[in-house]
Length: 320
Image 1 (cartoon, helix red, strand yellow):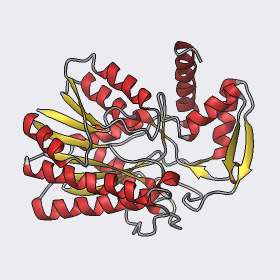
Image 2 (image 1 turned 30 degrees about the horizontal axis):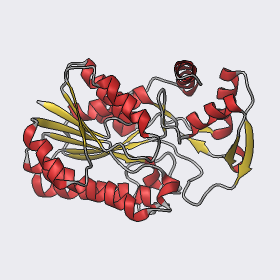
Image 3 (image 1 turned 90 degrees about the horizontal axis):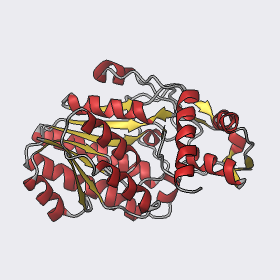
């Protein structure tokens, strides 16, 4: 029996695959190595994972129904961690059709194959961005989440609803996990932690929304992976569950920590917050604690210290 991890060469996917392999699972990773960010980063992740005999990489696209069908037909896939997606809230404003094609149509292709092949449990990666500018704080799963601010969260919310249809019609076990601002070693280069760390080294100017007066609920990668594995291990019927720490801090505080760790000041330029970005993300994780035993244990200071240590070592190793 094996576990399929879509987007398995990406940031969260590669960390998840590594953790699953470490506990003796057989992992099949599906990734199309798109160029939203440098594919070489994902190639390096996949090359490291390929050293493990229980890991198999399939290069393909979740929108390719024939390829997905062949994947399920050849491998005995019992559980799915569906992490593959077109990411990036702001980029989705420019390419809404692409985001829906990947995040909704691709999810439909996977759900259809998983259902026909008798998959035991399907875990779907969603996002805290589905809450938009809700006034209900902290963000709670009972919120309607029907006012997304861009195509990315809208496509993710639509995927959650589609998943419920498959549960209702076919009895599938599906858990949609709403991730909150995941960061950590080998993080995506387009996200704020990596951008700030690069900038404190090269002195470039980083645009900061609203002079840093926006708040995010940063969640360390190891805590996120622990939550995903807990969801894979627990078939729950159909559930939507927040996965975050529940302790938002301002972007200014976040930058202060990186400046303290690096011993350098960041050159910033205040810019207006884009209409796609809410002023705060704030996780109510009580449902995750109750259903998944989720107990995030990495405060931001510690998580950023680990990330900075990795970043320095990576720069040295790559000649940066």
